[in-house]
Length: 275
Image (cartoon, rainbow, N blue to C red; front, top):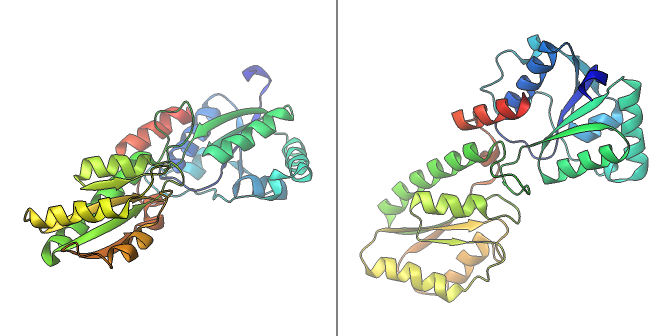
């Protein structure tokens, strides 16, 4: 197949993940080394449909390995989920002489790659998502950086929690996958983690926080996955009616988990997957 390919397209799609730039860099440098042209498809599948496709050279990817985000940007596309949108995307690829596409993204993005393959396009999918919810993939690009971001935040929250005798409910991203919450709870020494698919027993949460208080601890950290049956805010509201010893506060980490300079692990993983 490689002998027939002269020009490849590369796109980042869905939620951004630290390390995407390192992967784009590796794709461009490797393709150029093998005498292939690389076309950057800006803003994911939506950009593909709109024809936002431009030539990309090694000069364009200089000095980006350490940058978070994605220089070719990303977007979600409802239009690509429709047959007319898919046909328009394929038409744009053919019009630009693209023989193969490298899709860097999460579960939904790789499903889109499968759609392109069904139209006869040569496609390679690269797993990049902080959620780490991609089947048959042990670790996707961005996960390690996100975990480091979460740990730094929890460490800092513990400092202020200890100073004020407080319990903090810390909500992490991950949609319906509890990987970030579970791992960050383990390596931060949190008192409890609440995961998707596990019923939240507010009395159990209250008892654990109260036990920590009775034992003389000056703080408690509860990590709540984004997809848990109850949100951190809802749990905190329910705890207000119970005497647990600590004052309770909520911190929703949000999109800071998707930003920041990629760790050494993510830079290496992204480079290896992009080669």
